[in-house]
Length: 158
Image (cartoon, rainbow, N blue to C red; front, side, top):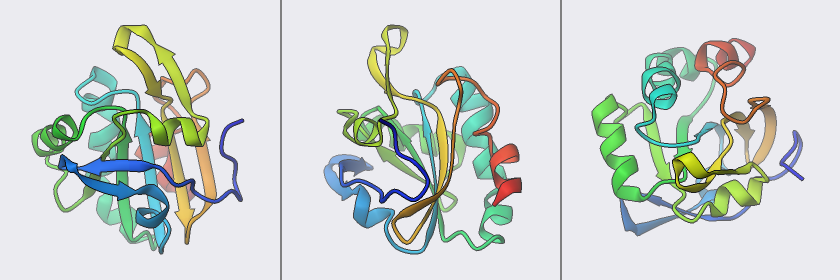
C-alpha cells in the first residue's frame, strides 16, 4: 500500500552530502510546508533534463505559495546526490537527499524494481507535506513518466 493524502510521513534514514550525515525523514519533512519529489535516479535523462531543473527554476514560485523547503529524494548514494545537485545548480534551492537502501521509497510504498537502473528505485512522485502530513500527492501512473509530477504541473495546484 502506498502513502496517501492524510498519512504521516514515515521515519526512514536518508543521507545528505555524505554517508555520515544521516537525516531522519520524519524530522526533516515534519515541520512547516515541504514539497518533496522523488525521482528514479540521479543523472538519468528525464531527471536531469526535465524533472530536477523544473523545481530549481520554479523555487521562487513554490516558496511564494508558502512552501518552506523543496526536497529531492532519489535511491542513490549521498555522494552522487551531492554531485548531481552541484551539477544542476540546486544549492540554496532544492535540498538533495539520498535514499541509498530505498528505505524511504519502501516506507512510502513507492518503490519499484528497475533492473535497467540497478534494482530497486523510487517511483517518480511529488508531494506536499504540511507539518508531517501529506496534503497533496501525485505519482506518475507508470512510475517513471514525466507528467503530473513535473514542477510546472504540480506547483500550479499548490
